[in-house]
Image 1 (spheres, helix red, strand yellow):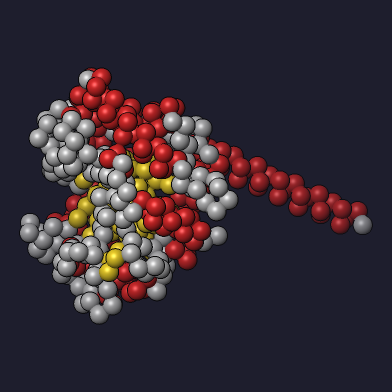
Image 2: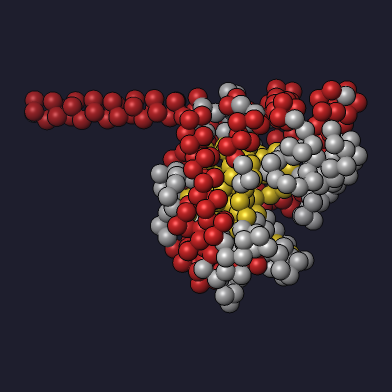
Length: 377
């Protein structure tokens, strides 16, 4: 009897010790969260992202439930599911047009329907990532309107322009903060404002139109307003750069550890400049190395926040171009660009019968590529 009692006490001591170590590790990871008032569910989402780094890379697709190649707003449909049998683990959405008070977003999805999608994704154990293609607050035109060279500076320094911008943020806060599950609790999501700001595009927040200091001030103003003025605490913040010079951009434009949780890279294979994709492979490898090292140093979560090959004209793109590179690294997710419903050639995930469909199935079958069913708990 004494031996049994001694053995039980020894096991109990070991279990308690392991539990303490585990809790200490969880506390350490939670401390790295940028929002110190983050909701319990947001902390849980952050820990889920951390834990999944050891399992594999979550597959993501932009607007996966809302539309796809030649279809729009068909319940339960997804091009990813059609070709591989499961939904993606990560779903990308855009709240562009929310600042206008419109009923539909910049991709023609009704905001009410978008709320339903986010609730469904949360029920499945999936994760939603929001970008915000915000209108230029100076001109009132779309995000790609770069005619005003100093929109960012005006937001910071011009009280009337800043008021317009903060009014837009009020609408962002209302939508994201009011995403609720069936129990009425806020759903935790990833928010990626001013995405891909280092791209060579006309976006009013890119480096050609604002200084590094002004961009960082804009980012901090945005996050601080959502957290402290609007009390929105169900968000993880993702900061992403394009692949032209991530080391330089991170050095100059990174908003700081108190305002970021996820470090992302955007990298598309553009065949006009790189027909065979060799440059894409080299640059993707270089860029992922940069962001994963930066993320590890700063205790952030690395991810590929936008990638793909439009039209997938290379039938082995997924298994021979993308997978050999990304499988070398610990990445949270890889998010493919959208399959447009109204642009025949604008798609980044194949559909059944497409020359790349078998290759995509092969890609998804790798044990370290995670779909929705793989991350359910």
